[in-house]
Image (cartoon, rainbow, N blue to C red):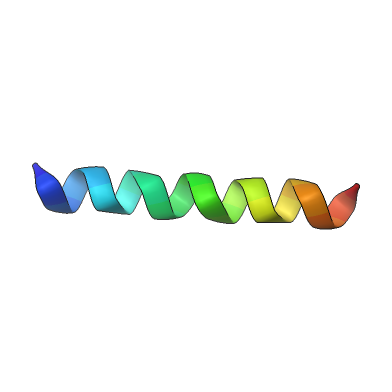
Length: 23
């Protein structure tokens, strides 16, 4: 469960950073 949660958090972080860069 921890691994899945961590993976989701990382993916979310990448998407967030990408969105900020695009802006």
